Structure formats: C-alpha cells, structure tokens
Image 1: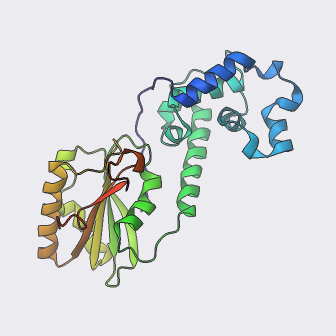
Image 2 (image 1 turned 60 degrees about the vertical axis):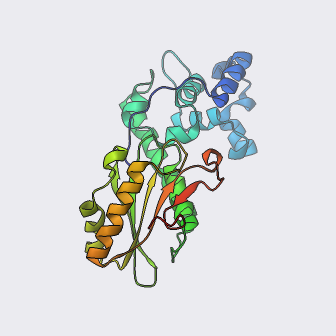
Length: 260
C-alpha cells in the first residue's frame, strides 16, 4: 500500500526558481497574446520537444487556459511562484490549487490528477528491490516519496524469511515525533501479512535524518515488541536529504548505529 496523503502547504516566499521566473516574466511580459506564434509553449513543444520548455511553460500546457485576470502563462507563473518548486506542487491538495486565484474546482482536480500521475511514474521508475537488507536500499526506495513532504510519515516494510519484499505500507501520517507510532499499530499489518521480519522507516521533513530522543525511545519500544512477537526487527531508517545530512548519506540507520 503506497498511499500519499495530501496536506495543506503554507505559501512560500519566492524561491530562487520563482525569482528567476519573475525576472523572466518582467522582461518578456509573459503575455501569451504578445508572443510570436512560434515562441508559444505548444508550438515550442511541437518543434523542440518537452525538454526545451521551461517549468512555467510545462505547467501552462497542463492548464491549457488562463482566467479572466491572467492568461495561461501568468497563471502558471503564479502557481510556480507560490509553490516554490515543481516538487512542492506534486504534494499540493485540491484545496491548495483552488486557493490560487484563477484555479477553479475542475482545474484543481485536473492538476491533482496530473501530480498523482507524476508521483506514480517516479515510483515506477525506481527499481523496486526484491531483497531489502540494507538501509541505503530503504532510502533509495522511499526518498522519492519523502522529498518535500512537510509532515512525518511512518512506513513498515514487511519481509519474508529471506528478506524478500512482501509489501511496503504507510502506517501513519502527520503525527508528532513524540507519538510517532505505537508498537501495536506498527506490527498489526506485519502480522496480517505473515512477515518474518520488518524494517521501519519514517521521514524528517527538515531533511536532517539525525534521530531525536523520541525516535530513539520509539525504536526501543519497537525492538522490545519484536522479541515478544518473534518478528525480527532488522532496522529503523530515518529518511532525510543528502544535502541536509552532515554525514552526507541522507539517512540514519539505527541498526548501523548499534541502537537495535
């Protein structure tokens, strides 16, 4: 079960991408009607391919039309600026899209469907490991899902006796670190699936995978419960980002740290 639950995002100040887009808009006017026909997104897509389009132009191709106040390029620029990046748009909810002036319910639903499609394509392109026995494999699979999440999610990876993957299940979403998961919830799905071993994982929205005291406490509870249930706890991996990890790994492994 790979369910990505939406959450409402705070409007962000202009990112470097958004700043660049705004400067480009100021120079060109970003008015579709003022552009040479050959320079419009659809014509450029047809002539040069999707790789030649800017982020704003790609969004414009999804929107297809603007509003009474903004043409499609201006509306696309507004979306990208408010989101801060394309990656953040992937995690927007219908309500997030509708909060942008010019985006109604139908457009919001269409955009949400496009974003879900993008996430599924990303997951399909990540080689699903048949055997998960190392934290870097856990990170490689879950990192595309966890990127840009602003809430914590907790996953259970169910394995058979040979550490072959049975299923990866999302157990909780948006919980506070102090109550990340209860052992009863954590192992219920593993028991139902007949798992011989499990690996737990959760993300840190900050990107720094260093464990908190609450993370350590929960891991010890999960370790103790695994002994009672006779289900091997192989690891608990915290998913972060390489650029925000002082060790440059992008993840923290309780097993490698000797804490399990």
